[in-house]
Length: 379
Image (cartoon, rainbow, N blue to C red; front, side, top):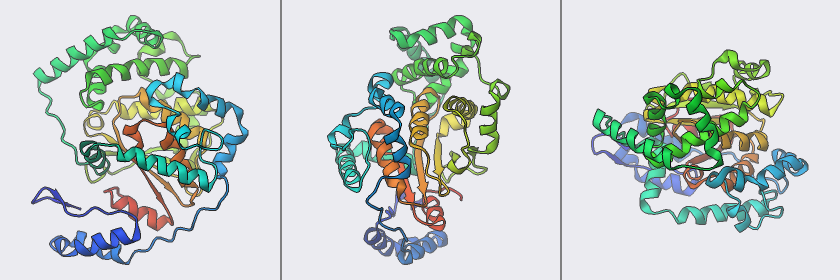
């Protein structure tokens, strides 16, 4: 709960029964001045999540990975392919039975203990930055011409310093359409979403073209250096977009950020190739929006009783590094306890920035909606 008059946080709510009841009770008097906060406090004091204990068995979505050698091979080489974006270090530290993902309750316990210890390494500033990103309290830099020109020049210098195999797609795009690739609009999008860190923005631009060329390997060369249109999609990819698997919420969150919605029950893709192309089109459209670049976006994934396939979760997670998009928080919602396995598996491999901005919510539909509302997301 944020107090606008004192500009301070007056309550932090955690979905741990004892903790949030104590907080809600101690903060109730402070909330009395704002009726909507007082009402929320009353709900919290009487609210009891009806979440059952996860069974000691493999999650259905994880069984697929166990029987699919292609996925296992893909993950085992993820360090070399994705650089610092993905790492097997935490999974190895957790001593998982198959070395890749939590499969049993014991695996899950060890994975969550490792993640807790990793989070404890964060400095106070890193803790605050992660928390403020999740709830939407972040200072947005003023963009005057002098500042922007300085950052664009710095980005240009950083791009010239990068070399290696991953730059080939970027270099090819520069030759095909220099006005687009080196244009102010394209480059500013990456600077904004990397919070004006020129080094990170340069790396993101290189990754953008490297991944784009791999995803659209069968397209004509000129496609690499222009924006994607709906008519560029294959018939299968168009069906995915039209089915509503990817959606944009009609309302922003309480911090004014765009909310992206992913409905697993509507994901009826035929091939991973068509799914990647549909995802590229959807995220590409959002990333061109200047307001979304400036304020950031929030993701909400909801299974609706159909847990997302592990392979899909990992493939889309890897692709997010290709876009000019500041995903400040990801809310993973599941009506079954299988979500704990899925979330732990993803957190083990992603970078720290992403790892500690992922929030999981499980329980009944009403409980999930209430949880999202406490983060300012209109359900």
